[in-house]
Amino acid sequence: MSADTTPQSNMKASLLAETVEHVDITSYDARPIIDSMRKMSFSSRDTARAADIFNMALEDKSCSPWLILAGSTSAGGCMHVYRDMVKFGMIDAVVATGASIVDMDFFEALGFKHYQAAGPVDDNVLRDNYIDRIYDTYIDEEELQNCDHTILEICNRLEPRAYSSREFIWEMGKWLSEGNAKKPGSLIQTAYEEGVPIFCPAFVDSSAGFGLVKHQKECIKAGKPYLMIDAVADFRELTDIKIAAGTTGLFMVGGGVPKNFAQDTVVCAEILGVEADMHKYAVQITVADVRDGACSSSTLKEAASWGKVNTTYEQMVFAEATTVVPLIGSDAYHRGAWQGRNKPRWAKLFA
Image 1 (cartoon, rainbow, N blue to C red):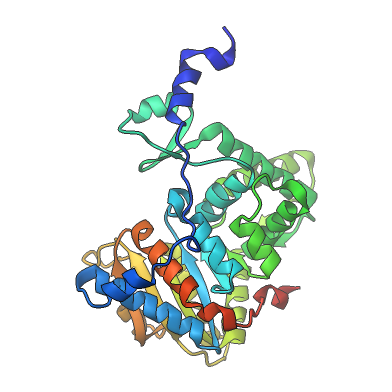
Image 2: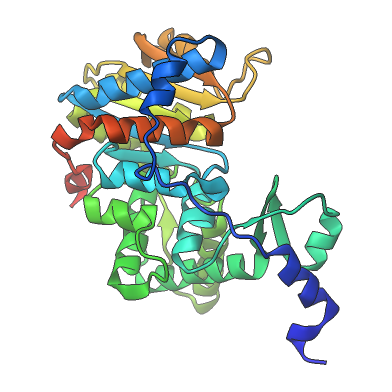
């Protein structure tokens, strides 16, 4: 019996039957919904205020808005929202988890898909079929390993030295733009073409990590120098952007390392002897609980005590992000404040 007609492969095909389709913020106008939410209460009013603050950041010609991204919303259908924010000049820099950038965005740029789970399935059955699960979303593990090996190929073509994650991801975008992308218009490729730097402060905690480890092991075995990721350079480079930008705004989906990393640039600038303004505009969309002292590092008001975020224009939205991000993104797109913005193309700082 051939490999593609085995019961196991038939089950895998049935499990990976429905692809996740990414929402298009240009195809619908969320302004009437946001306008209605502004007159409501609870999370609806918080969402409307978050949308207003994001639009204020876009209208402020002196402000550089950053996208801070954690969690799995890219796999869940918001991938093109973030791509279009960069494409249309709503975002000047991205700080994200490695998984959001590599396992999700770069993965799809290679021509692979994320899939909807039809219903509850024993995770041991998924493992037997080489299917990885993110809540109700599936990834083909064999395709993800292809992503690992592609990272290895990119490593092997680069000079063996230290790279910031920003610099390595720029090389990934360059590789895609050279005709290697199976799916054009990924976040990585768009950011590369628009001069928008992407930082992953915990870059190896992703599919890229496996490719990097294999690269180093093979080089060590051959007695050759190898490439490495310089996390300190990440912090220095993003702080350089904060200093150059002056006024900044944060649009944060989730929290964790990307959130704290972006906020800490204010403190880092001060350590370097540069008086930097706190992030003037800040929105965080999260379901994290504050009672354990976490909330993906802190609430935005708490961050003010550290000198990171100004509390005049800040809003926490306690909601599952895939229900909120498409509304705020569409609202901003159709209000059009991005049309008058000058793209700073911060990647030029490192050319």
